[in-house]
Length: 296
Image 1 (cartoon, rainbow, N blue to C red):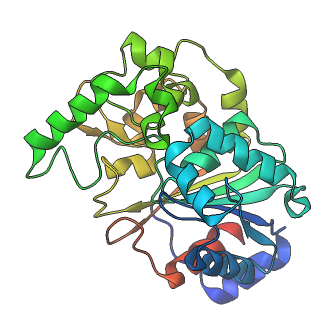
Image 2 (cartoon, rainbow, N blue to C red):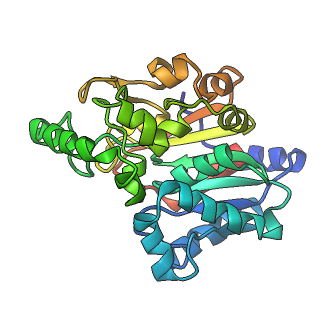
């Protein structure tokens, strides 16, 4: 359910009683920690929580960090993020991971594949956490549905090989509902491995996922980049369909608790919120309110 925004006085009383952790930020596709916008957001997070905050790049320069968001695989981005986190003494005692768009795949991957030092809470703003099933601005359920479904199908033909999974970050979280039961998806998809949908079940991924106190999921109600946008709330297209959308509790990974989502939800650790507009359209005031309410 949607949570109310924080009343300042109430937040202040919570802050006095609760430990406030530092924050590591993960940027979205086409962005960089070296850009002025991410620097401003990082400073705002630190100021709001009155604690250490840092944007963690996966490259040493603006160009490298930006390019790695395209041409470095999802797993390797997570590896680079983890190495940077472990070299940052400000994060050594545990931290909150704040992700924007594609950066939430990095937050999720870090939790499941590393989580040392541990993530205490995740704030996912318009995140690609369980993948996408269509190209940006091409909604399979919209006016251009037949064309978009054809494009998605053609992409799915090429997505699940050892070669193509190593080409682009975005291919690695492409989840084609028409192919999720195929041998190719199970054998080669990095996302399938994270979801424990593949040929090997990784209990560490589940154990690490459930160790996070709160997963705070913010969806853009009119998102034109991520399809279906219910994925930002752990939902997905039904297997075999590019039309029927399942909410979180009806997805196979929730019903079978493949990576711990049901476990976290049943103990009250999944929180939903939403913004009214398109992808990455949120205000500083909304960000501050999420931080105050959920982290303080």
